[in-house]
Image (cartoon, rainbow, N blue to C red; front, side):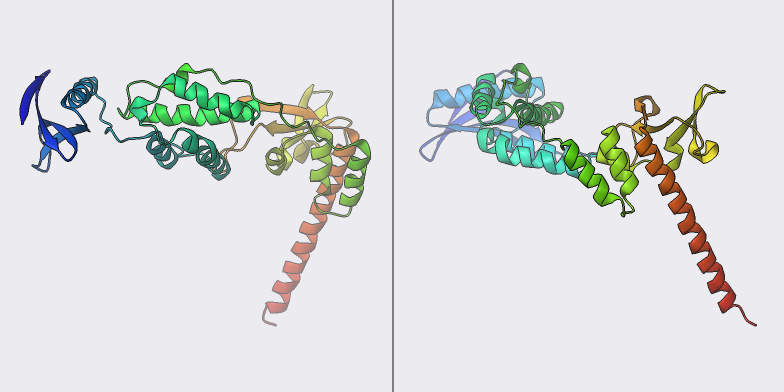
Length: 302
């Protein structure tokens, strides 16, 4: 057994199995057990080199084991780094990680990952995937290593040093033709979702934005006041109408801040569909109220 001094640490190197093992004593842990850092290799020189690197990592604050891989880092990020994200976002990121990142780079030890590895991996994917997808996949790797870096598992994030390459052309837009849109509108006329369909087709808002609309988001322009006012106060006897739209939903149902709100003026078709929907809702409420009153009257003692 050979003893050597590496920095301020005393190390021992001894034969084990078909090679050698090097060990550094790190003192005792909170549980009173001796803590040792070990490295294995086929020669004493290789073991010594590994121990020197391990000491440098210790002094830099890196705590990851030699066996901690990119797969481990990605899985740790998926389990701990996505708090507050929507279920759909988590599912999408997990699919990207498990389909592309882990199969391509997962076996590499995180501390041995180099920018060249990331470059070559992205170049292989560039011939098969669109640029947007490549950016998302690259983003998964960067975020996973960023979390590992914040937890002292690696010194630097090599994925940040690589530029995402250009991928294949994305799929062309498949917008409805005018005839198709007219057929959808006609089919929806008898549906309670008619106003939702009309607004979606005529304004281009996203589905999550349309679902979040309330009556106080529907506004009428009051010329005398030179301002928009909710139809709940102003009514529908006006010429111009608009909707307030917040750009996206967040996890938990909260919308983004008021600063991200935009105002979309409505075409006549959309404004009329909302007016009819408002009338229909009022009639349904009245009918429901009358039915409740009738039920209460029948159940009252004579």
